[in-house]
Structure formats: C-alpha cells, structure tokens
Image 1: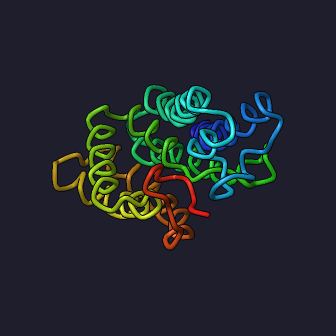
Image 2: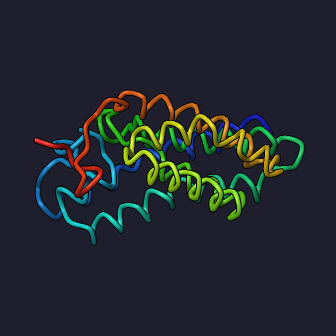
Length: 201
C-alpha cells in the first residue's frame, strides 16, 4: 500500500505539472502558441509577449499552484518515515511535468514557478529566501536565464547555510538540478535593456 501511495503522488506531481496553462490561456486569448515567441518555451514571460501582463499574472499563479498542490498533499498525507523522499520527489515530478508536459507534446516551460510553488508548500521561508536570491541575481546580472540557472545550482547550498535543512533542502536539490539544466540552454541568449525577457532584434 505504501509503494502504491508513493507512486500515486509521483504520478499526481507529474500530471499536475503537465497542465500547460500558458499554452491554453494564450491560445484561448489570442489563438497563438505561446511557444512561438521569445525563447520558444511555455513561460510567463512569453505569455506577456503574446497575451499581455494580466493573463501572464494568471499563468504565474497557476504555475505556482501546480507545484504547490501535489507537494502540499504529499507533505500532509504521507507518513513521516517515507515523507522525507516522497515530498521532494513529488515536487521534482511536478517540475519535470512542467518542463516536459504530456499534455503539450513534451514541450513546456522552465520549471521555476512550479518549483517555487513546491517550496511554498513546504515552507514560506524557503520560498522567500529562494525568491530573494533569484531577484538579487536578476538585478546584478540582468539576464533571466543566468539568474535562474544559478538559483537552481546554488539554492540548496543557500538553504543549508541559513539552516533550512528539512524537506525544502531536498526539494531544492532535486528541482534545482532540473531548473539549472533547463536554463543552461539559454545561457548565451540576448535580452533587451527595456524588458529583460524580450529578445533584441
């Protein structure tokens, strides 16, 4: 029964992450594929380009929610003796689903917001620390892909240093590797001064 429950949460995490809200919402609003803009990924920034900031804000909230919900359920429903690995694995599956969604030909987003939702489910402090770290890197580098890749790489170390060593630490390790690998592909991408997520002509 425990094994089935564990597998069930991993599947739930992947299916939740696979809900391609940016694709669905942009198609509903503009009848275009959000992946046709910017980086070619199903992201909030591309939703801004295709559908506007208001719809992008909705996409951001939903992308956070699809990481939050399965992680929160795993955290509250799984026994302590297996929660230590089911919770971070469920979070990682949600991020994998967001990046490679079964409902969108396995062409999805980058996983940052979904990882944020998983961290929020575990601890609002870990979410705040990770977001603050990402924001500092964004302001310093003015390059979203590099800031996000470095956040993925060093988030777990940062948590360890500030004594966040529970579920959030393992979520940061598992999700951080996925995020860093996803954003590495855009490491050398050029961004404009006016809007960081918009490519220069």
